[in-house]
Amino acid sequence: YPLPAGRATVDGGSLVRPTRALASFCKLSSLAVVNGRSHLVVAGSEMGSLLVWDLRQKPRYPRSGRGATDGADGGFSSDPEIAHFEGPIWNVTVFSTDLFAFSAAAAMGRGGFDDDAAPLSISSPKKGGGGGKATRGDDLGGGGIHCMEISCVRCSDVIGGDSLVFALDVMGVVSFWRLLELGNVSHQSVKLALQGSVCLAEGAHLLGDFLGASYLCIHPQQQAQFVVVSTSGIRQTGRKFSASVADGPRRLELAHSFFDEEEPLCPSLEQPCGASFCPFFPGLLLVAYAEGDLALFDCSLCVPVTHWAGAIAQAPSRDATVAWSPRRPCVFFVKCGSLLDVWDLSENVCGPAHTVDLERELGLGGGGNGIAAAAARATCAELFVDVSGRPVVGHNGTVAVLGLPSKFTIPLQSAPPKHGQPVQPIDDLLVPGGEREVFGTLSRHCRSVDVPQTCALERDVMLGILASMSPLQAAV
Image 1 (tube, one colour):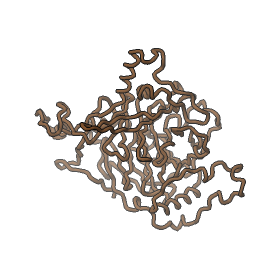
Image 2: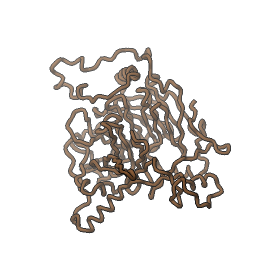
Image 3: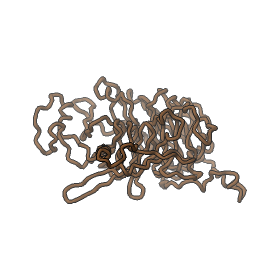
Image 4: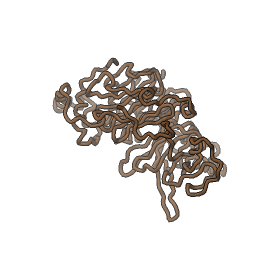
């Protein structure tokens, strides 16, 4: 252990040839598969556009554009690897938001809009909110929302029969989209419908309102609330502004700032680079910092529950990525460089329970090929955990699905002896009638989260671990 799953061998080697390739007209910065509709793929580009592919379409040859059943035009390379990519494996985009931008520009040229009017106006942020809201996105049909590189694209879980696509650019503008599949007798068409947008940097003390956002994290069961990782810290906001106590502070910091009413003038001293919500709790957020620290936040509080200093190996690095296991509430993963750390808080709250060296154990080294050179550019994320609890990691242009011992993928069946003490909620210690004046964030403000019955015991164990944690943990 761990063993790579599903790797193919070609001529005695370990190369894996893709069965499909997605063609685009510019560099892509982030990609997401639509939850509930796995045949649809959405990606953001460095030009600020969103592109959609439909994997049900017939793949094509890269040069002639003919379908897979059409004859090839010959002239394939003698190199089998290059010849494979010259075959019928390519899918072209079925939709792009650049169509909106072009149509908006044409409308302006015809006098449809005032020539002096801005293509998109952002309203001032409400007090206590996370940013301004776009007011002319519907008029433009979505064009002009993102004028910078889209750094992160994420898709929420299926809620109410549909999922929502989030797109974040480096300036801190977040747009929300829904995918529409329109079918008729002859064909099916796919379109993106803009639902709204939020500017997180509007009104903040930032140079040119430039947030330097790099990552967006959505709670699996609460798509209305999300956090944005940026060079200015972790910003917490939502699609709809509200004054609920459960929404918590706008910024999550290791050292709490005393600027309550407005943003501090100085930028964040910590550089977060990755975050992940625990799917078993309403607001438990794990954050990785470029300096090598890990922090566990309750999003309704202004300070972290615990802080692991120097817990990330091969730090400092901006490529650290974290992810929670969807099978075990106490397990999460940290990937930085060539090391993957598996943390199990039920075994050890001060360090990882298992470490995988991707280069030594799996042979995912540089190799000197062109794929590794192309992967030198920073990626949005190099870690994903599938529904069975297996981590999918990317390293040096290669992707591997790792198999882990069953203890990291099967929920606890009995509470460990050291975590067997019952936890008494603080609500039970309050004098009846005085909870509103003493405490503002009680359990009555927490949002409900569905927890599978097989994970209920371990979720209760995790509650006891969180209650007994020290504010600062030293990595060993």
